[in-house]
Length: 174
Image 1 (tube, rainbow, N blue to C red):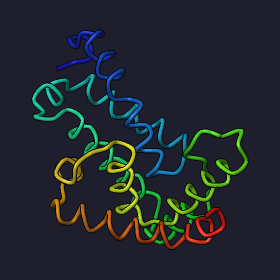
Image 2 (cartoon, rainbow, N blue to C red):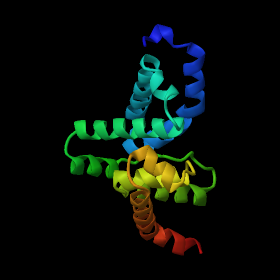
Image 3 (cartoon, rainbow, N blue to C red):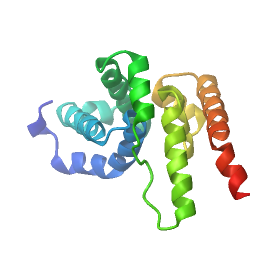
Image 4 (cartoon, rainbow, N blue to C red):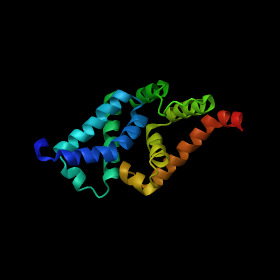
């Protein structure tokens, strides 16, 4: 199907329903706002050109998360070796959370952003989908094309790493 055949209202509705969650998910994976915007645009251009993809999806959100995840992984692979990409992502000081006027809350947000950035991308994806999207392990598994057990393991390992990296901050505020 061509772009001219897709009703604009349908694409707008899909964008309104899913863009914010996809943007947050992609930003957490890419750690780069420009890349995130490019990938989000790529998703919706693909839907404009092939609307049957989303119309035929059993679970639209899961389909879009899988599409976003695959595009982000492709981008990371295109950028070079995985280790180099992980090192760059870890070094970036991108703020995932909104700034807070409360200095203690801002310190927590900054520390959590840094800790998330140190997780491997596969664990970071699962942690994001579980904590910020509220998805079940079954939904995460479907979205990322992994087993529910793998999703649960990546979540557990990711949380363990976050706890370890945030332990000093937690001890400081208790």
